[in-house]
Length: 128
Image 1 (cartoon, rainbow, N blue to C red):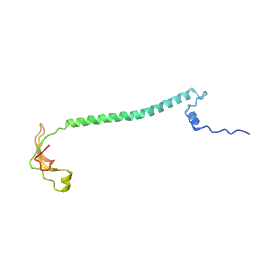
Image 2 (spheres, rainbow, N blue to C red):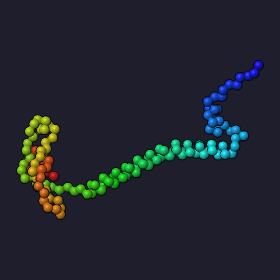
Image 3 (cartoon, helix red, strand yellow):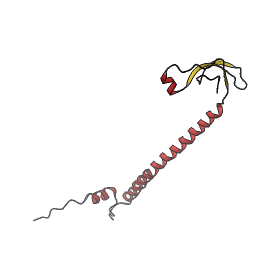
Image 4 (cartoon, rainbow, N blue to C red):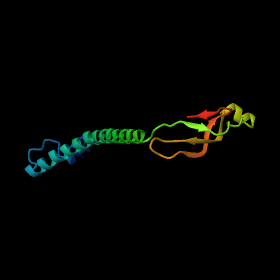
């Protein structure tokens, strides 16, 4: 009668497959390949989140720098209404916001005055 060998547990099979079973008869190139695999796995598992965090920080700083550049490019100026802003027409407009289109003149520093329609508070004589 011959004995039937039992199948080794999964962890043992996985250790053998990866070359982590401590087999003294394994070739030196096999052991080196195993350590290279372990090192690459560790590098990818540690480097992936670090790369994502670094990309997030880079994107945040790039966007804030762009927002600062755009804010520096813009400037506020005062406009004078040429006619009073009309009152709200409907109840929904009266409840939601009290702004209306009105004809106004504005002048930016170093530029010619411009005339056009702007949003202004209903009933006011000037806007920002």
